[in-house]
Image (cartoon, rainbow, N blue to C red):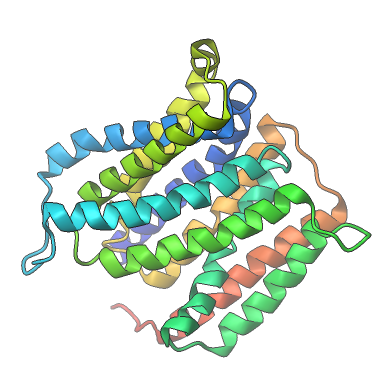
Length: 298
């Protein structure tokens, strides 16, 4: 059992790395095309990349999963895909005004936001969540607040987007146990991509040459970040403890910062690095109660 858990944790860490470096791809892609064009093509590619995986696994579902019908999948996919479109839009547009590393840390605040939003659904909270939220908020202050006590525009867009990422995770938590995850993801990615393409036709000048120039960032964001990473996550979370999964996936922010520094040559002042560290600490603290509740495995 321990070997399975170790393998699952390593796979989730790989998922976090793929997602973290996707922030770099998203920034590079916008050197050639607009944010809506990038988001639209990225998620439509993600949906297409899931089709062979769906065929390979045959759309298997757990027994007794009565809600798993095409109609239910489409309905849930439209709702989740619309929320995902809003979250991705704030993230992608915001990346024009902030660094990939900062965007990764602020987006990852969904780890703290999800349990706080759960209070409105009458879910129980605990001291670790509030302590983690306070630590993360102070880290955000150091990372993003200027000397005149205003938050940078790109960071503000990422923060708003984090609330929609949290809402998306809550939606997934509601439907995940009822629907085939691969089919559901293919539908929601299609919905997200369609909304983004419609917005691109309205607000952007779509050029084929720009799309070709952005092909590598698009392929990474669509196939690797969506199709491959999601599949790895789905496989890994069958054997991973909740606390281990949350911590492994929170490393997405660290990989975003590493990718931004190595590939985009992004740098933060000392205050920014301290803030990023506090944000990561806050995310981990918010998950501490999961460790306390986890039984030991023999």
